[in-house]
Structure formats: structure tokens, C-alpha cells
Length: 130
Image (cartoon, rainbow, N blue to C red; front, side, top):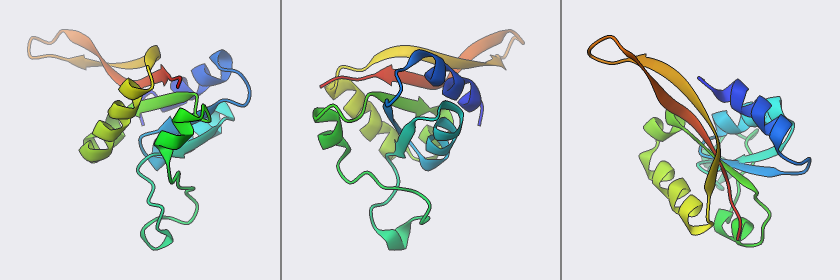
């Protein structure tokens, strides 16, 4: 997943120990958890154990967690956003509602029609507050 490792390392170096992160999907959550050593949850993980991988931990009320300041950062990634536009929209609604501000972005260079390489954001880290 492009930018995941780099974002996880950035989180390690620039966020306090004990920070809790909400990601869009479980794949990014696993990457963030591994590289940053921070607790993370995937928004799109089903709370129903019959509809999810048992290794993923669901977050039943992300709005409540954000409102009570139990989540400190939100991570959007282009891979998960393409796979699940519904949850991508939900994540961005939470970012707006909880005053999210971009604190870090990972880019990948993509060639445009003329062959010029243009940076495209693939991972965006937001700091949120109630």
C-alpha cells in the first residue's frame, strides 16, 4: 500500500505515545499499528463477528470516541477510499465534524498525459479534536 509505511513511521516520530488512530480500512489500520506502535481502528470493520475477519477489532461508535477525545488522529488513504466510497465519505464527515487539520501527507508521483510527474496524495493524516 503506497505511503503506508512512511505514514506509520511519521506517526511514530510526531505523535505522543498513547495516541489512538482511526483509519478508513483494516489494511491501513494494520500498517499504522505495525509501523507506529499506536493503537488503531478501521472505520469499515463490521461490528458483526459473522461479517468480519476475527483479527480485526471493530469500533462500534467512532463518533462517540471522537466526541470523548479517545481518538486523536484520522488517516485517509486512497487505496481504501477507492474500495469503499461510502466509508470514505463517512470518514471525511468525521474529519470535518471534529475540526480535522492535515498534519501530514504522503505522495506518489504519477505521470500526466504530457509525461510530467505530478505528486498525488495517497495517505493523509489529520489531527482531530472534539
